[in-house]
Length: 217
Ligand code: URA
Image (cartoon, rainbow, N blue to C red):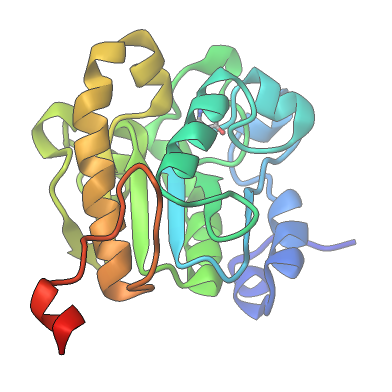
C-alpha cells in the first residue's frame, strides 16, 4: 500500500507513480466527502498546462478533470488554440478532491494540496501554465489577486510563464467575456510559438504569413 508523504512525492519518477501517491493523500478534509482523487490528465510531455480550481460533481463521478459543462467549453478552447488534452496539453486543478457543494477550496485546503500540485509541475515541467479563474490565479500569483485586474498579463515565476484568464464556467455564465478570453488565449499561442514550437498552427489563429522578401530570397 502506497503512503502519502512529501518524500514519497519527491521519489516519483513518472506521473503514473505520482498519481498513486496522490491518490493516498488525506492531507485535508476534502477527500472524506469526495468519491476520489482527480489527479489530472494529459500528455506527460506537454509543455503547456491548464490549471482549474477543483473537481466538480461530474469530475468526482468520473475521476477525470474538466469533463462537465465547463470541461466541454475548455476542450473547445483547447481545440481553437491547436491543443488537445491527450496530444499536447495537460489539465489539472489546484485541489485534487471535490469541495462539497462546489464551493471554492479554502486557502488552507489549497495549501495542503500544494505539494501535490508542485510535484505534478516538477515532473511535467511546463513552459506555460494557463490559470483558469480566481482560485488558480490566487494559488500561483497572489492570494489577493482579482481575475478582472490581472487577466491577460504574463507573470513569470519559477521559470514558468503564467497566463491568468477566465475560468470556462465563468465564460458559460458570462458569454460576453469570451472575446477578452480569446485575446488572452492568443497571447498564449504566441508564447507557445516563441518558447516551444514555432510551427504550432491552428486555423483560428493562423501563423503569420512569412514576409514577401524571405519568399523571394
Ligand atoms: N472546474 C474546475 O475548476 N475543474 C474541473 O476539473 C472542473 C470544473
